[in-house]
Length: 312
Image 1: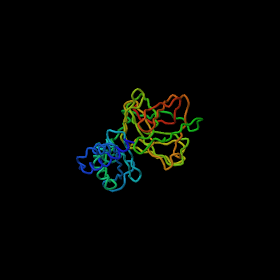
Image 2: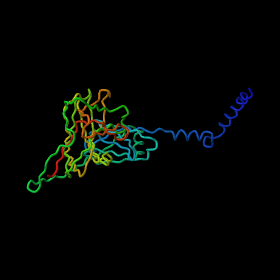
Image 3: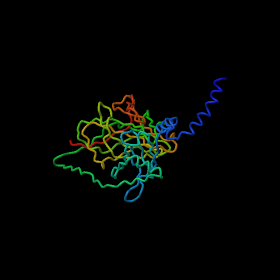
């Protein structure tokens, strides 16, 4: 009872004291304010990527927060949303797309513009002609070689590839790929072929990736281009990605992979199935979203191979 009356007495005394002391010298509140500031979870930047000359949207442009794993990709209308944590507000945001000059913008400038509305980012188109490959029949002969798993779609086993629930717009999606071992380098990468025994009820969008191998594991990405593959709903059969326009010259063993970069409105309807073999010679590696580690798909391979052009 004594404690109760003491609190009743103390409360009005503290109230009058706090009213009399200015906020700038009120040391009771200053730690509370600082704590609220440091607990700021971050910001959201929404914007649109446009062609600087035509004003048309740039689809599938890569928007990445440098020195982090945070990134997103613009949709078919060039629009994007990028989530920033409080500790990343001093980083640079890099925007890149095939056929355009890469651009880097300070995060603070983007946040200042975003507070007034949607951010409009203009990319300048560039014309970069590909180097010509001269093949002289008299002095040098070239040949094509298919390397990888060429299993047919009519198999007893199938591997199902899905986006998984943890993928969001700010992380890399799940990937699946095969290492390519070849004995006659240098070689030009002509195409990637991927066999499907079925796909979901919605369109699936994949991105082609190329990795350097170390100890038989992918460690470093070799291509910087956004090479997009669109798979229509309920598709079966072989799909070819033509890589000849990119003039990719390889000097050592590598890995090709496909990244799932976009779901439809209903994720449960988005999936891909590839023919598979048990106890194969060709290994398959996969990883889920959020920068997970690569893992070997034990005792199974999928229908995926590349075509290489090399000097005989």
